Image 1 (cartoon, rainbow, N blue to C red):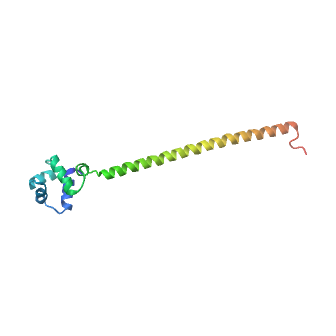
Image 2 (cartoon, rainbow, N blue to C red; image 1 turned 30 degrees about the vertical axis):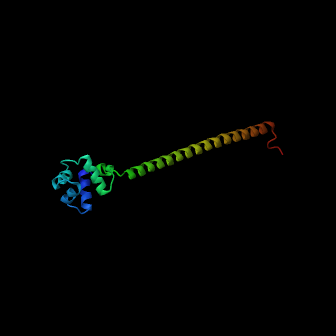
Length: 128
């Protein structure tokens, strides 16, 4: 939502006319109309008055951003990144365990093969 639409929305939610809002801010109805049509913008002093009047921060008023939402979103991004990092570390640990299992299994299989070959060559493996 752009700035002028946000002004219209805020004013209407309060049930105010342009004239009433103008009175609260010390400007004319025509000035409020120009702001809402996007033909002009309030000066900084009026922006501060508007944000105080509506009980919102300047960021939310001017850019439509609630600083608390940005902080919460940033915190969510950190949590998601942390989860991905944990999953990656878990995958790496499983891969290391799998490799270790394959190495140990290969060594055991090689030893077993040597025992079988030695027993066959000695003729005592199947002798009873």
